[in-house]
Image (cartoon, rainbow, N blue to C red; front, side, top):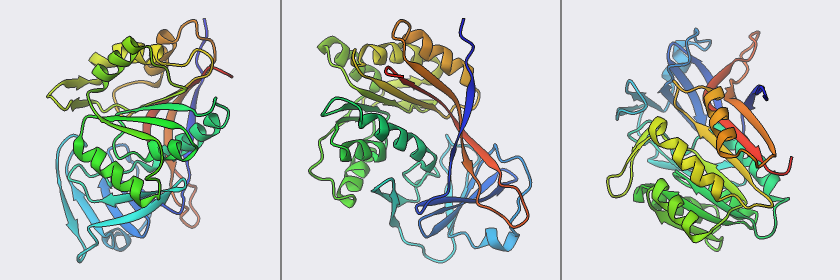
Length: 300
């Protein structure tokens, strides 16, 4: 029996994003030139920057949990939207009522991993992006020349993704934008005999499909991943799976992926994604955990 080795992969500060400080259940971040102060339950340590530096944040989100809507408070009148570069595409950022800005910057390390594998995939590579939100990963894949199928249950998210496509100068890229329930869509693709070289799966803990379908990660993920396993090209494939469900375990997600991909060989990598905090004079840099991940590739 194989005993998984769990890893921590680290997202570093970039032109588009930096974690400036964290602690006392909050995080202070920079998206481009805009700084925000948001809840972060896993930041259980003390803050390092001064209260005055935290008070200069352009936006402060008040809300207890990621699932609940909250309210932004602003210093002055910040721009309603701004564009931030990530991995050679542009993300249109906004202050959403769910405390997000339209991009999850810790995913950038996955985006680079994906483009490295697409460079070795048959041409054109075929990528399926499920729960694809505002489409940054879809656009990065499309920029490599891949044919991308982008699936999300939210019309608003796909409209936002198309704005990112325009902002990135990729209107001619091959992306199918599909508003659908991920479980229904993958089941249909299996019946059609479709295959993909790359699958990106980033489900929420809970959600609703476009026709009111319910999604619960712990109830519905196993069957979804079985469908996804059937959609992987038999000669070349990779999967990037991410879960933000805190009460889940990296070992549980690793075990599920190994179960649905049994007999396929290849290599697995599982663990946590963390963001490296910006340096503070005289202090060691800290890591803020954000999510669980599993990556699999059929070709070692």
